[in-house]
Length: 428
Ligand SMILES: CC(=O)N[C@H]1[C@@H](OP(=O)(O)OP(=O)(O)OC[C@H]2O[C@@H](n3ccc(=O)[nH]c3=O)[C@H](O)[C@@H]2O)O[C@H](CO)[C@@H](O)[C@@H]1O
Ligand SMILES: C=C(OP(=O)(O)O)C(=O)O
Image (cartoon, protein in one colour):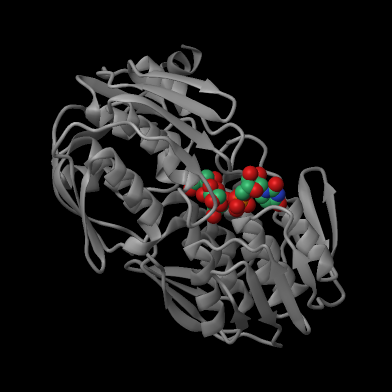
């Protein structure tokens, strides 16, 4: 088992390259199931969620080989093998196997997904969509059983704006008979990315990126080649790190438009930012003032950046209030930040941060992916050594985190440790 070690207090400087987007990759890989020939996905991030999905495609008879950072999926021999347990429980995005396998085989058995524990994360809107397309859906002992004689396009209004449900319904609908209309759809850039891949495979989709998506079903989809968009959450995390400790950091291979809400907030705090076509330069050159932030669906402030942003706010002057309107309890990082000296309290869906507080290195645990990112921000700002355990969460979403941070001048490394030490951290 490994932990992440950080010696804080060293400024960051230089350029960091951003990887392909996790939340696109984890939908694009299952989408390849829908094709009848080879799909090549370029700019694949080397993260554990991607590895799990690759294995899952092989578990159902596909071939999924890597050439550099390209994934080559041959879906020809795939079958609708039940996947009730095991790897599907280790990530959230295994739910996309439901839509993709239903779309291709008209049947699937998939265990309920895992992913970050952020409070209740129901999938009722995904199921409502599958049912509207004509599938029978039952939940038997923690696995979802889906079956349809045929899938027929329908008009589906999402009661909650959901990234997962929007993509999953697209996956199931592209090979359905007739037209599907998804209303109140999510508008995240990853949805456009998935629609772009599906369109390259021959699907007929209009409106991705708006709140009404129209899909005209086709009988078959063919192979194609697709390059994943840059990860706006990874990019945002490095921007926050640069705002925390940066003498001048260029975050390269980004789409600045995808980061407008973060850029606006950082500027409001007093951070110097220069945008160009595919990079942003971030520099902290003065004292920062606190700001209030509310997470919202895209293009609002991303909930996935809320946790690292909260860590940054401990270094700013005054009281800041961070409200998460997407998840009811995405605040597990707060206890850990407090161990490091932060003055933060949680009230309902808000964290109230009083700053600036100097942080001290401590033994802390990454309770989920972005909680881990938040502790990395805090660790780099701290005096002394921070030890972060449970870093398997961080490995779900950040490619080569240690190497990228070292490239910016951070003193960060991984160390082996034993299970007794983990028990100690979990009990403290
Ligand atoms: C793999 C992936 O892409 N994960 C992202 C995706 O998660 P995910 O797709 O799970 O998030 P959703 O957009 O579906 O969830 C948004 C909100 O809607 C609720 N909801 C969702 C579906 C449903 O059927 N019923 C329901 O009530 C959720 O509990 C949550 O409160 O979008 C989230 C919101 O941007 C991000 O935090 C995650 O990083
Ligand atoms: C919540 C996240 O991921 P997932 O939905 O995969 O758990 C995230 O990427 O911040």
